[in-house]
Image 1 (cartoon, rainbow, N blue to C red):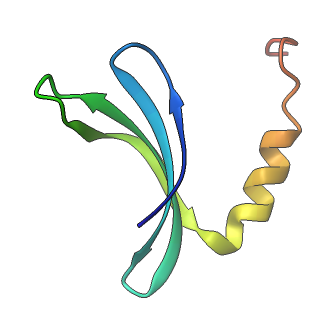
Image 2 (image 1 turned 180 degrees about the vertical axis):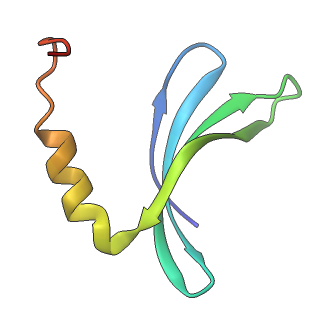
Image 3 (image 1 turned 90 degrees about the vertical axis):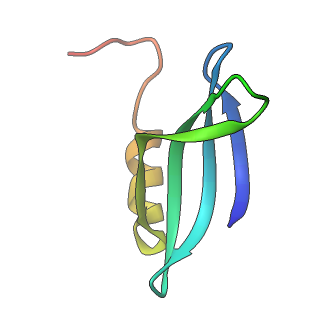
Length: 72
């Protein structure tokens, strides 16, 4: 697993972006992690994993979102 980024979501959760290998496939994994109360961060089921080949499409889709414009 290669850590790419960790983004604070709130006081107990963060969003971790990693690159992992699973069954011979390279995957981008974007997952919510939480503070388990014992000093350990643990992953939740909330998240998304996809093959790295889709990264350009996902990046393009995300970059088309206009912050602050709301949903139309």
